[in-house]
Length: 385
Ligand SMILES: [Fe+2]
Image (cartoon, rainbow, N blue to C red; front, side, top):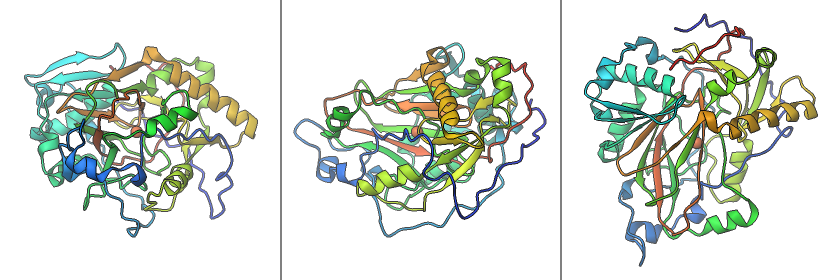
């Protein structure tokens, strides 16, 4: 179980943010096409080659008038701590297949929407241990949006994304949407060699997400898979000396670049962007497992290091995570799939690898969790799987 949660004191930024425009800026957007890329006519009615959206009530909308105040702190309750570690309520009658030796599982024979509270507690712990879990043949997309949100709300406060499209009336649903016949990938690849964007979601928030749900509504027949990396295994792969040095370091995570790109694309900025300082190594509150908590999309600078030193160390960590195919897995989407990951101990990237104009449309429910906590270096961490 978890080691004592002794929090390392965190820096508090004053009004003047000294890091706002300093540091690595690898922010890259291959997937969020924004309102300019949204083809309403084709999405609602289809084209010669592509059918209409299967779930039109989930099509994205952007209301530039709707603004939200800064998020306020809240106390996160970690349901994984209440779970029976033998998972009797989650896995009764289920088939579990591991996707890779150290990350990922696929489960058949469980209907998420039917889980009791005990089943949900076990889901939180199971996902924390396996990092990412694909559930097949789910009815999630066919629930009402309110029912889906009710389910996800068990795991934490719903996050409202500052920039993404959302179904009308449901700003808590984050949509990942690429219209049918969208050709903007050609523009993207005119400038970039690949679409890889390793990240954990919205780590610039003071309380980034924990147990996170993404379900498919429409997708290409082949392509558009999602890759996941085990950030706890990435931590353990480092030498004890290196890990020891990372402890106590803190990094700046920024939402400014995402907001600026949204504005450039004619999109919305619902909440003023912020930067937040988090520990480089965080401890999971249910498993006690330590994980690297940096990502190339949002982490900009290591506090207390000079710019070149910070860049040197962050580049090493980003490369280490990106190249670690021996602690990564690949989830293939299929109709009626819900993928659940623990955003505290994973990073992920989508792939923009299909070119035949098929629509890709997914919905994310994003419960926020605790403010990242660092516990002291121990040196003998083992996998919780
Ligand atoms: Fe993401």
